[in-house]
Every structure is written in structure tokens, then in C-alpha cells.
Amino acid sequence: MPSFELPLNPFPETFSVSIANTPYRGRTRWNQHLSAWVLSLRTTEDAPLVENIPLIQGVNLLEQLQYLEICKGLEVTMDSSATDTPGFEDLGGDAHVYVVTE
Image (cartoon, rainbow, N blue to C red; front, side, top):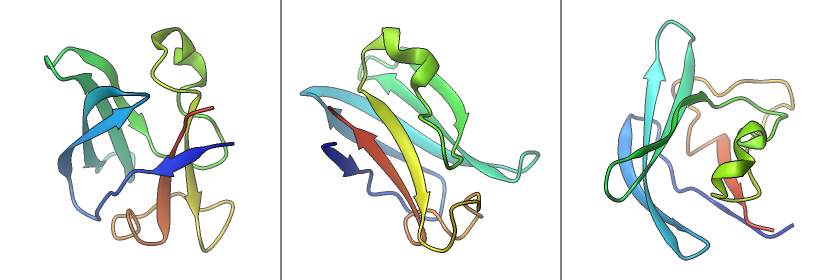
């Protein structure tokens, strides 16, 4: 399955990404209450598409949002374990977020 990794860092950030030739604005932030990273995606005109999805392993994070036609999937993997949720310092290091395009 073709995919590419979002180049994320272990700190809250805003970034630009092109998926299937469509530009998006992304944002990651640490949700203290959940003890988890969350991801938001918006159009370049700042219209919200996906807001505060927790970055957890083992699921297609966009499965219920296929009607938005952003991509085939968004998946999180951890180098250390199949059951870990990325901690505050893991994003962009031990934790990877992949955009599945086909």
C-alpha cells in the first residue's frame, strides 16, 4: 500500500501537507487530559475537516471519515511496541504517522 510519513516533531506544530495533489494545513498538539497527541486537518482556506483525532495505533484514523476523500487512511505506528500510544516525546521519533494514499 503506497504511503508516506508525515514529518512530525515532538512538540505542537502547524504544518502544510499535500495529499493526492490537494494541499492541507495540519496541526498537532498534546492533549493533557487524554495524555495523547491529537491531529487536526484543515483546507488551505482554514475550513476544518478533521479536528483533534487522537493519534493511536492499530486503526485507520480516518476510517469513519472516508466521505471526505482526503486519503485512504491515516495510521500510527510505534517502533517499540504494537500496543503503545505515542507519548509526549515520541512523535516524529519512535512514533510515525503515515498517510495511506492507495
